Image (cartoon, rainbow, N blue to C red):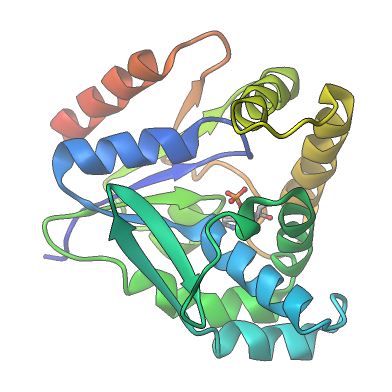
Length: 222
Ligand code: C5P
């Protein structure tokens, strides 16, 4: 009987990263931020000035990625070739590049087993786009978390403002729409709810409200 997995899929800014982290803390489960793997692949490609449309090169980069995740002062730190790149992988240009490389079947295949290796006792919370459909199809709890594009852009805007980064809300909304379109329309593992996923719309619902709903599902199913 393998360890249980809770999958949380949805578009960027739906709050899935925050919910996944709180849930993992609360249940003492391991955490997989699968988007970070695509971001690290993109950053590595950008650092090498690789051609972002060359699937063979990108697949090779994904397959040989030298990465580690470490917990430092309660925060997950992403290391690429030993360097802390936690900040860099969140940059807007890396977000855009990540959604481009994530559309390549070779890249997705190269990262598949790496993601499954995160499964461990007593359980795993995995967030991304295809956790419930492709990576952990046998997960006992699957959530598909959404929110309107406007609300997601606003959340991102607030996050960036708190960090002292100034951006335009309109640009963010455009970026979000472009990434949504790419994530939903790609041929391999498009962003879509698994048949057995519970769909939650977090527009106008606070984090704790969403967390309580998910915890109830966990109590019912695990
Ligand atoms: O979730 P996050 O925004 O960090 O993911 C970055 C990009 O990686 C997304 O825009 C998406 O294209 C891709 N991704 C994916 N499959 C996942 C997680 C992320 O295609 N499971």
